[in-house]
Image (cartoon, rainbow, N blue to C red):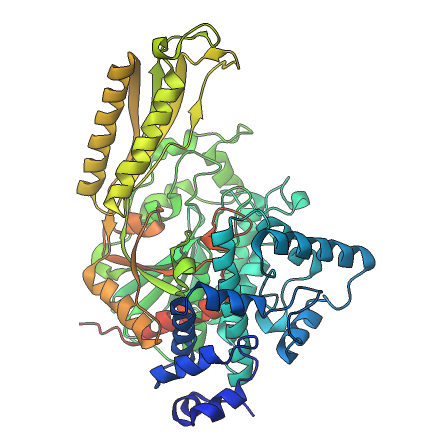
Length: 587
């Protein structure tokens, strides 16, 4: 018999624990302490209560829990629980070939020698499926390179994920809509540009055959969900409209992009298309109409991978499509105009894509976090307070190239060490703000040689902060430091500003709506800035906007094949979005 939230809240503690015998491996004390916080508004709140209990228990208690787990396809300190036995069986770990078993045993030994506890990985995925042996071995190998403190935390995160899956089984509350959103993204990821499929890499750049296939598939998914109007516009945006009961109602705009970086992840952008689509599917199934139109847009381009222009999709909606971009060519010499013509898009229709802000309530966007914060906090959702403003530069420091063996250290005019000193200053100065970031991502010594003191060093500089004033103060200090470093070292420099983007603070009313939606799920409301740019920052120029972040796995890595999330977190994102839609009052 499946458990219920009412039982969890009302039954005697011992009785609840009897029904959850193998939740945490040989460690019933975690659930017992969490139950002291009853009543819970949701199962998600109970899950987070247990996360907090373990976080507050101290390092030794955490290590004891980790060490209570079995090795993969190996031995255990205590007999395997029924849950662990079942999970290892499903992953095929009880049916290893001799070579696989030998490899796993060696990995177990190497891991234990380095960290002092067993490797732990949540191997189950949507619908009980999950990682198979080769993916497990690859993850095992990769994580062996992690620092000890990081791997300690990663083990705990995987334990909590295992418990989340076991709770879903006990309460029969599997994330069915989260599974659907997961499946949609998996199916979309089969389309990739030529030259990448053979490598098993996902790359979808603007108006390639893979890009056009993605647009067609998203449009088909929208039709299946019950959208009233579905179209592909003049720049390749896939637009679905779910109409209100009255034709003159205003429109809520949402969506994200479906193009990718090269060798990217499956969820960047695309999650923000499929989450609202799942909400429309539910509305249509219930024949429910909202007091406003809902417009979901799969933006055709955001990443700037094939052509130099970025935010083509969302920019077109605010009238920011520059006709000069049509003459840009890709690496194969194909102009943007020719690519559009080949795709059947009508360039002359682009100006008509501009939306009238007065017709819109605002813009909301769901996006995978693309960072480690939510993952480290073990919180599934984050409410964005602002999209960081940024400024970028390219620069050159010029010194004197000279013999590395005969030039004393105090006689050198080394351009590369000056950039290195600047990088350390940027790290310190941005860290002082707490929420600013600064990066020197490119550092190049032209014609460098092992025995020559660098006389020239080219570099990039990327500075970001939650508001323009903070960004500008950071830039002022960094540029002053650059000047001071060069003067002290007897060097010259040039610096060119290449990009400046204004911060996009969330509209207070819309941010509050996201906060209310997250709180209604019983999970913590965590407010955070976005360090990355998003389509929302373009729409921000003409209408109020706010974003919701979804936790990423694998330390929140993004723009990388390891980018991932979970079906449970996707379910929570859908639930939060549905709450926002159903509680939005329209004047």
